[in-house]
Length: 99
Image (cartoon, rainbow, N blue to C red):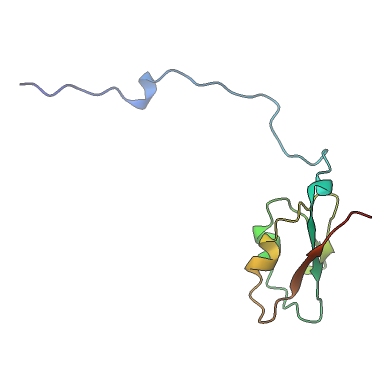
């Protein structure tokens, strides 16, 4: 029995494309937060792990160092605090009442 030849990727039907994609920079989503990160700058070693892992680009950098957080965009996920390699942690998550 002859082996059936499979179709290549070029034979696939084109999928839908959403025009106008980009970032959520124009949408301030920080009010979703129930906790917020606090930088303990005296413990920070500026490894930039928090900046690298933040899904919202909410870590503020100044002169190549972590300077704090942009709470307009920070959703309080805690990834920055979780990824911080500093013993005793340089980022603490605290309750945020948006008050």
